Length: 307
Image 1 (cartoon, rainbow, N blue to C red):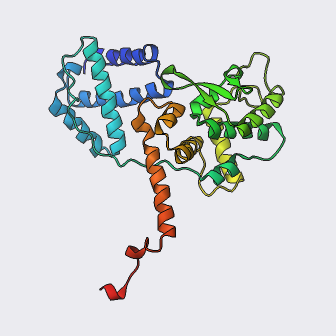
Image 2: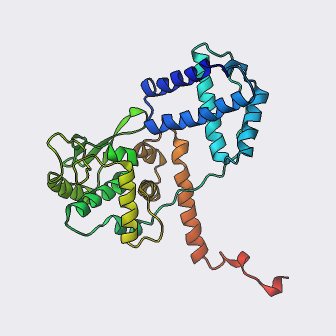
Image 3: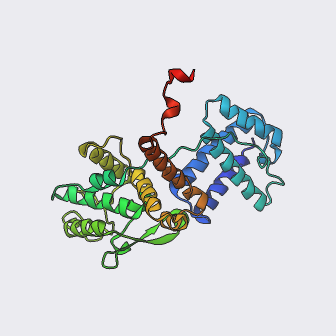
């Protein structure tokens, strides 16, 4: 790999940041995946991006598998490499995409874990009137009420809230904004928190959720608080912020059956991303059937007369 190869990667990452306006985390993931590809080209003594052919691209996939990468990781690496080559084609720096026809290993799609409606309500109903408890109750209520991503939650400014109208404006992936409804309990919790927020906030701090020193909360800080309250509230599973988003989506779908509306509320660009929640709904029905129907478990019982 010639020295200019890394320069092309840097140009591509700048394109993702400045033109496509992808998040810092997404760009970092692209960088890690392209490092794997760059290392492979160096090991194979392939001079530049244009010199990679489809046969060598398949060897790249085999190499990742031998290194112990999961099917999910390999699919992501292939996706990043294909996107990079599409960029090279657009810029006239390549004449083909050698990874276009390379098959990725199949990955079993894991269903997201979701709380029951009762579990979710119990979890977010944090008791206590101290500022920390009031703040955390507002965070959890809002995540469950509106299905916010963690990155959307920590990016919220006070100007994004319209509690009188029951709305919050969030900026999602690709810097796209959407207005989301805020439920009654979340509005009450946010009103209580905003009344206490001034105890910690500096005059120029716009963030909705801040720490004791007045700084905007980080994603890591929210993750730790969610985990803390999961233990404190006696939840049977280890809690993480995305579980509230999953629960929001699955409960909404169970009640409404409107997949398109759930897609809009979650901010999914592709409805296939949202369709995983239909599997959650089916799993719920299957459990109810298995527990309640008198013939549901017959196949699992040992019946001597059937042998």
